Image 1 (cartoon, rainbow, N blue to C red):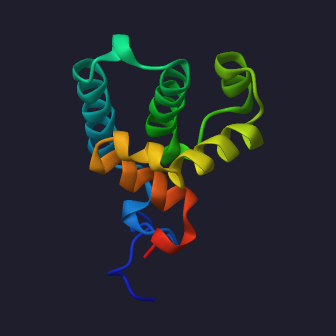
Image 2 (cartoon, rainbow, N blue to C red):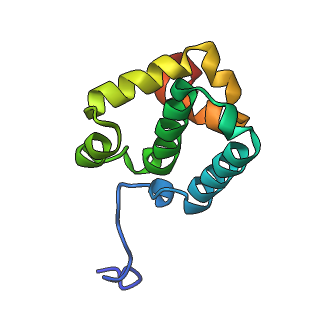
Image 3 (cartoon, rainbow, N blue to C red):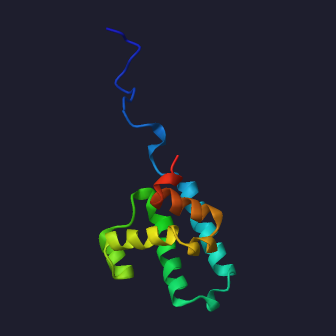
Length: 117
C-alpha cells in the first residue's frame, strides 16, 4: 500500500474553479449600479426601467444558475420561462446597446448560443 496517499487528499471530478467567482459577480453588479445611477434614470421609459430591473436581477443570480422561480414571480409577476424569454429578446435587440460591455457580454453569453466560446 502506498503510504504517500492519505485520506485527506481530496479526489473530485469537479474542477477547483467550479464555484462562482464572487469578485466577478460583485464587479458586474457594481458596474451595473454605477451605470444605472449615472444614465439619467428619471428619463427612462417604463420599458427601459423594466429591462433594467430584470437585467440587475439576472446579473446577481446567473452565476448561481439563475433566480429562484418564487423570487422571479414575486418581483416580476412572471414565471422563470417568461423571464428568460424576455431577457433573450432583450439580448438580441438593439436595446442591449444601452448597457455596459460587461453586462452585454453576460447577457449574450447566456442567451445567444453563437456568442459562447
